[in-house]
Amino acid sequence: MAKKTKQQQVKAAISSGNKLTQSEVRNLQNAGISMNQILTVAAKNNATIGQNAQQVYNIDQNKKGVISYTPPAYAEPPKPGSGWAITGSQAVQSRSHNGGVSTGQTPTYTYMAPTTVKVTQAPTPAPAPAAAPAPATPATENWSDSIDAGTQAMIDALNQSILDNQANQQLYMGMMSDMMSQMAAVQQPQQVATPYAVTTSTNAPAQGAQMTQAIAPRKKNLNTSLAITPLETATAGTGLNIPV
Image 1 (cartoon, helix red, strand yellow):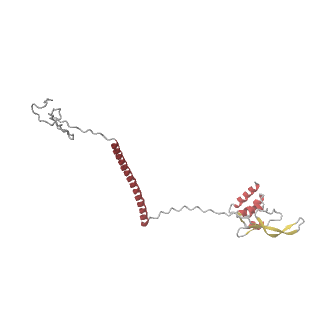
Image 2 (image 1 turned 180 degrees about the horizontal axis):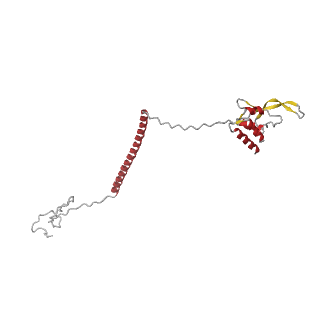
């Protein structure tokens, strides 16, 4: 948690102009933050190290912004895996307790890990207005009209076919009904009474009445003889003359 707080302090120091000056580096070290931690945060955020800070604290930053530094012999070196790599060495003089001066080689570290690239997001452009549909050309209009006309003609033909089928169905049902009626009449014949004429002295016979002939009166047989003989002339005194 303390490490995170120190990183926040360094970020706050470089937030103004994204630059670390000599006084800001000194204040951060007085707050207990090591040079290793200060430069790590600065390198990750592409901060610029002021010229005075570079000379006082033995820091180098090239034109591309890559940071290198040679810590004092007594300082804590960067931890492995923190993004720093040894890229050289420098001769550093140090004084002993008895006042002598000694010279030694101290490694130079360069931050090699990827840095954060600040990208300013451009404002989202307003959507372009939708293009108006291209006006229909005469050829397109004619083609569209022909398609519509053909479709409508097909629909009209289907509707007319439906009407014709309905009419044929009604005609067929009528014919079937008539045929059934005729068959019923043949199976059950009706007995029509024929009128007979009644002849009176005042009324004429009915129209269509069957006329009957008068029965002719039967003549009497004047031969009353029981004998099988030729017919004789009926004269007085011959044979039996018995009136009937």
